[in-house]
Length: 422
Image 1 (spheres, rainbow, N blue to C red):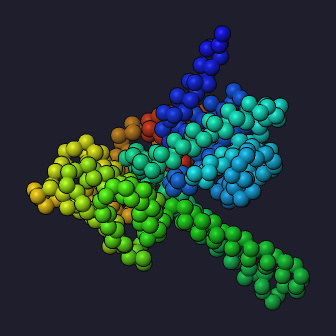
Image 2 (image 1 turned 30 degrees about the horizontal axis):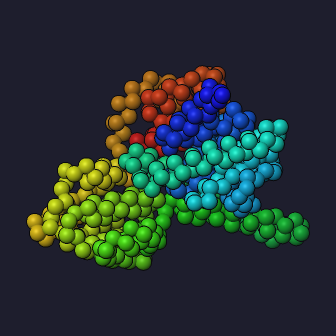
Image 3 (image 1 turned 120 degrees about the vertical axis):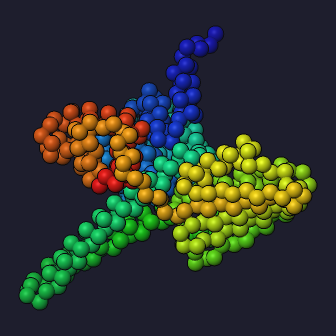
């Protein structure tokens, strides 16, 4: 006789994970994994999510310090299969980790300080691997579908990451360049010391600029590459449909697309092509991208009988995706001649009136905490500045998350900056 009660915790975890919003995926995955493998922190690193490639839960001292450079370095040594264990630098400290990859998207899962006794159990690794693959597949599907909630959150987070990285790069570059000038001065007579420090400083400059370039690569995609990915994604669909799908290439020198715009554009075109294929008497669909420097311009045309309706559920769903990026979708239908769809997606986020902040109903102390949070200060620094305890700061931060409708410091900072709070 099977003990059904034994399986319910795992089944409940699976259900919670399968239904998890992207903002909560790390917390849900850690809740599911912890009964089988205790750990100090869980980090997901996926370039599918251009705005927030890191999704984290656990020890604040670890998740607040872990960097893209550390995760990039770890990903190089982790094989596609099986799970990898060893020492790695995570959060500025060398610590034991369990790392797993998800082959379809290249996503990486890192569990810090895993319990060694539990890790030695084969069943433990099988369950952790299964849960991770479920979470990684959930992330990949959500990003591919590009729902409005993901697009809006990704746009705010992308802008924030680029801004912060650019500021750090400028700050440290200036410092290091000044140091280089001083060390190269002829008034210093210790040639060996000067040469050594010069080399180290030059290396640091290269690393900082590489970090800036890496961040840009993760949040932007060349327009020609984005269109090429669309063509590859549609190839299996068009190969057996009997419908001629023509692709008009965008200019190769067009402005790079923010990641959320590239995701949305592909999802919208896929949805429109599928909607057009459902019509009778379709033999040809043409899709074209262009870029005017400020907007991605999409045009999709079919040669059907004009049966596509702007009020159809699949078209209204696509319209919501466009609206999430402050874009515009226009459908022109001519009976007997087919449908022509025009989509405009702005490449830059629109300015949000700061007056909207009033709708959050923040108390004066909560606003002070948010302003300090927006400058990148940690809880201890905020407590020192305001003359309150760190526990009180944590209390205010939890209330802020609830009022702002966010689930992390990154989201709160991105939302604050998008409303003019710097």
